[in-house]
Image (cartoon, rainbow, N blue to C red):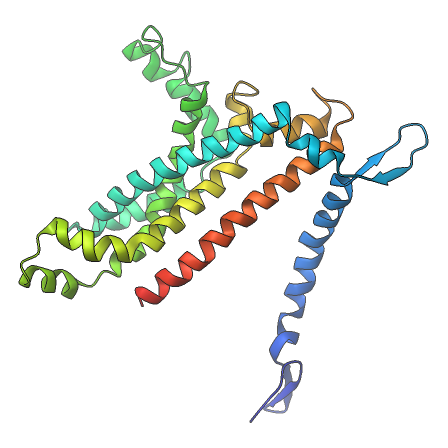
Length: 293
């Protein structure tokens, strides 16, 4: 029985849709949930409203302003923080995942993977409060070990990076464990039989196969840290310049008044960065899946 997209198939006297018609509800939902906000964002980012006449006019002034001065500094601050978190989280997460994969204790593997699944989704204000109570100025660990006298502060760039690592490392574990499981034992045995050392095996076999998954994990961690907002808002406020905090200040009018359209332009900048991230991530993930199949 041959069907074309958009036609129906008779199944036991009932008619069921095939092809793109089956995905029509999802397409409608995506169009409404994502399309309307994107259109509103684009319209606001490229228009300026005259406060006297209430007339909007198209312009690129908002986009130009979003890439200057303090706005550019917040965008670069978010990129820098996300890059640091992505690289450190990927390194630590990969070593932890390798320890779990090579462990002989199945209970350890299941415990780490279960904890990673929970901690990878633990963020926002609760995460900030946990760290403030632990390593804040009056935190338990800070008082016990006298970290305040040694100059420790949680409320700066590296303190925020440490907090972001709390959910980035477990996320990297979840991403890279399937790739490590895909390394066939026969490859290591063949390398050993050929006289290769462990370093030579990883250099010429293991790491080249894992590179797409590792880079894909880095990209994923970058995107997660780049879009994070609530944790930074509750913990550091405006101490660390981040584009998400700048957008919130402009939209709510708490600090900036009349900059709503520039906030939308900053949001468009973030979408462009996220699009570039996904453009790198998807081909890497596709190639990794083909190699480890």
